[in-house]
Image 1 (spheres, one colour):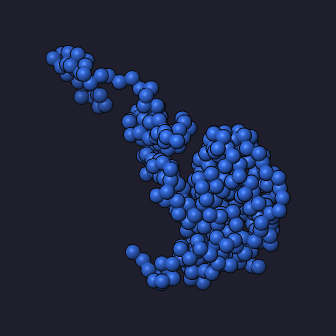
Image 2 (cartoon, chains in turn cyan, yellow):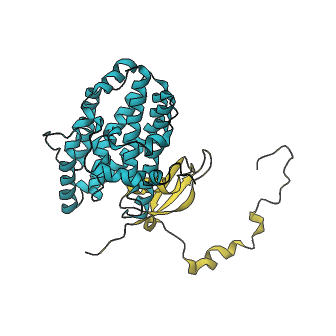
Image 3 (cartoon, chains in turn purple, green):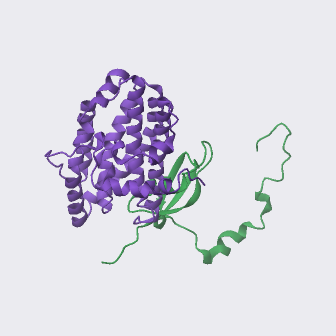
Length: 252
Length: 95
């Protein structure tokens, strides 16, 4: 891979995580339990979609083949999306969504921290902007996890199940593939093993406060980073891409 | 199960350093931390603030509308309490 190809692939993968999670959260609009939570969720999902736009635009510039953010977001087939399996998981109930956000954001905030120190200015500038948003998202999801875990007997039991269910998607975050290795070698990219250690510490602290048990590491589902997605992904893309596929180039 | 409303919090926002906090509105929240988050998400989305105070509405002691006349009318005819009887030197700009 040339260094440009590495950056295009890496930026577009960051964009995929942000876009797919943002799309998942958009599905919750008008379904939040409280008005204030509704506003928070909508704000956060737009934060993620804004980040996806920056990553895709940068990937398109680096690639130099005339693709813009919309081409990346709406006109690729499923296997071209390289997001983590975790972010495409369906919303489930409020505890499920909260756990998904918490597990991802605990990782993403550390990844962004590392990316602000990478040697490619395009990526490091986006990371520096994104990290401010994500620090707040993580604060929000952590507090909710504590409230649910250390809440009533029912909320505790249900959110523990959510945690056990989603845990199998966390291994993928720390398993470096060729692209991670190249990013690290050529651009001082994130060291996923170091991130894993920090992530475990941070997650353990919040889980302890939430009186939740950290699940055992058993079988981990992987494949998202290589474009092999879970059955949820096709439905998400069908809804998200419908307008651009049915009316190519549509604007308003 | 009956649905319980979260308590109401009043939100005060300082829009710039040096100004005082002003009442912006209210939010519902289950606890203090959540009230602060909700205030941030509801009232500072367009860069309206640099500092937020929240306080539970039921902790605010308010004057009784029925006692308005006893509370406020006596000040009406005491114009000497307004600093309007001084000549202000031209050099004083910000008063």
